[in-house]
Image (tube, rainbow, N blue to C red):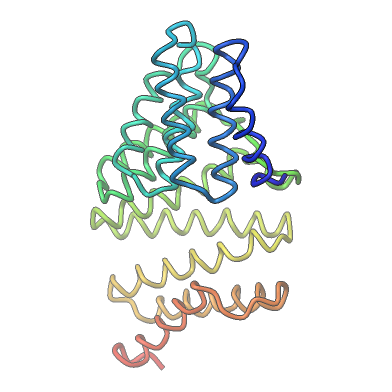
Length: 273
């Protein structure tokens, strides 16, 4: 929808009294979401903070704490305030209980926490959160969710989509810890899953990530002193980029530039023909 217009409506609504505290809390959360979609991120963070402050002033709304913390952590992460985002995700994991403590809610909170820790270069902590997330996925193999605003069935996040996401994050944590061989295994599994998604959906959105994982594998192979394998991955990535460009009309992407740089450096500095 038109979130800029929605924000204008919210601003007018804020001048009127609220019949119940629940309605006012819902207002703050909805405003935060619309401000995010309207690309007014500092204000989205402020609205989410106000929701948490309002919650603290109304103990009778304590059952909504997980919902509020989830929104605040998300908005903080989008504003690159990763330290506080990590703290809020940890608080969210503590708050998840009763009706809120579903496997998918816990899984998403752990993913958010791991991403925040990665952004802070706290690789061991990120890996710990990811291992907890993988355990949730192992125990609840039927988890699924639909990203906000998704209208197409292919965007339903099921167990394999979550596994692919976890493998990408796991690889980054392992690389940060210098465990490159394990990172390559995680990237290989991610590439396998991504190829399966593209084979099923034939969707452009499932094609470009294949190029991105090829770039990452090329960089890992080069770091491990295997320039020929690095070239194989880079060339595979460029093949995915070429197909993506042909299908979408896109000419240059960050991943295509990265792949070309890797190939050039392999030729110049590693003697790869």
